[in-house]
Image 1 (cartoon, one colour):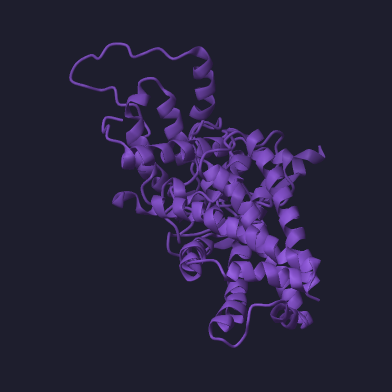
Image 2: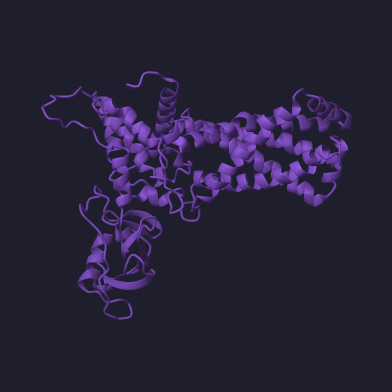
Amino acid sequence: MAENQKTVTFIITRQDSPDSAPYKETFHVPYRRNMNIISGLMEIQKNPVNAKGENVSPVQWEMNCLEEVCGACSMVINGTARQSCSTLVDELEQPIHLAPMDTFPVVRDLVIDRSRMFDALKRIKAWIPIDGTYDLGPGPRMPEKKRQWAYELSKCMTCGVCLESCPNVNDKSDFIGPALLSLPRLYNAHPTGAMNKSERLNALMEDGGITGCGNSQNCVQVCPKGIPLTTSIAAMNRATNIQAFKNFFGSDNAH
Amino acid sequence: MAEHREFVWRRLHSLLGVIPIGIFLVQHLVVNHFAVYGEESFNAAAGVLESLPFLLALEIFVIYLPILFHAILGVYIAFTARNNTVKYSFFRNWLFYLQRITGVFTLIFIAWHVWETRVQIGLGNEELSFGLMENILSNPIMLWFYIVGVLAAVFHFSNGLWGFMVHWGFAQSPKSQKIVTYVTLAVFLVVSFIGIRALLAFV
C-alpha cells in the first residue's frame, strides 16, 4: 500500500532553446514497479508540474525503438551516458539526474542534434555500394565464423555514447569519434564491401579522422553494445598506415 | 599526401617521440648514470659525447628539430582535449590525461634544462662537467624540479611507447595492449631508476 505513495525524483537539466542557458528542474513522479527512465519522462509529460507545484512546459526527449537498438534516447543518467529506454529506475540511486549529452548541440531539454555523426557516416562511406543499373547477382559468400564476428561490430547504433565519453570529441577538435572509426572495419570485412576498402581507409585518413584518437579508451568502457571499439581503432590504425605507404610508395593505383 | 596532412603529421609525431627522441632520452639518462661511478667517470663519458664529429648537426637533426616539432604539435594536441577523468575515471583515461600533463611539464623542464646547461656551455659561460650539474643540483628546489622533470619525461616516453604500439597498429587485441602496458610499465620503472640514481649521484 505504501508503494502507491512512493515517488521517484528526477532532477533534469533543461534548456529552452539551442542558445539559451541550461537550468535544472526537479520533478516528483509516482513510482511504478519496473519503470524505465522513459516511463518517468512520460509521467512528466502527462502532468508537467515541477517539485514547486508550478506548471511548466513538458520535458522534451527523443525516443524510437524502446529496446536499445536505435540509439535515439541516449542521455546522461546519473553522470553516465546511456539509453533511457534500457535504464531501469529500480537500479539507480535517487534522485535521478538526467542531462543531455552536451558533446552534441542541445536542441531542447534532453533532445540533442546527432547529425554530425550521420554526416561522418557519409564521409567514411559506411555502406556497401551494390546498386547499379542492372542486377549484379549474388556477391561472394562470407564465412559463417566471420559473419558472427562482424555481427558484433554491426551492433553499433550511432547512439553517440562513445563520443560523449571521448575527451577528444569537443568543440575544439573536428574528430569524428570512436564509433565512426570502427564502422569502416565492419564494411571492409564484408566480402563485397572490401571492394571499396581503400576508399574508406583514405576517408579515415582525412583531417578529423583516425588521428583524432588519443587512446583514452573510454569508448570501449561505455559502449552499451560492448563493441570492441579500441581493437577496431588499432586495426584501422594498422590498415590506414599500410594504405598510406601504398599511396606514397606504391604504383598500383587500383588498390 | 597533401590531403592527408594531419594524418602524416600525427604519425610523424608518434614516430619522432620514439625515434629519435625516446632513444635519445634513454641514452642521455644512461650516460648520466656514469656519475654514479664518480666524477671522473662522468667527465670522461661526457667528453666522448662532446667530441663526437658533426656534433652540432647531430644535435640539430636528432635532438632539437624532432623535439621542437613533437613539442609544438604536442601542445596543440594537449590543449584540444577536454579531459574528463572525474566523470570517466578509467585507468587509460587517467594515463591519457597524465600523458598531456607530463608532456607540457616536460617541455617546460627541457626548456629550462637546455638553457641552464647546453645554452650556457654554448655561450661559453659554463663548461660541460660534473661540477656544472653538482652546482645546479646543490639547490634543493632545483633537485626536486629535476627529479619531477625526469619522472615526467620518462613517464611521457613510456606511455608514449604504448601509444606508438597502438597508433602504428602493432598491438591490436586487448590482450596484446595489456601486455604492452606491463612492458612499458617496466620501461618506466627501469629508466626512472637510472635517471633518478644519476641525479642523486650529483648531490
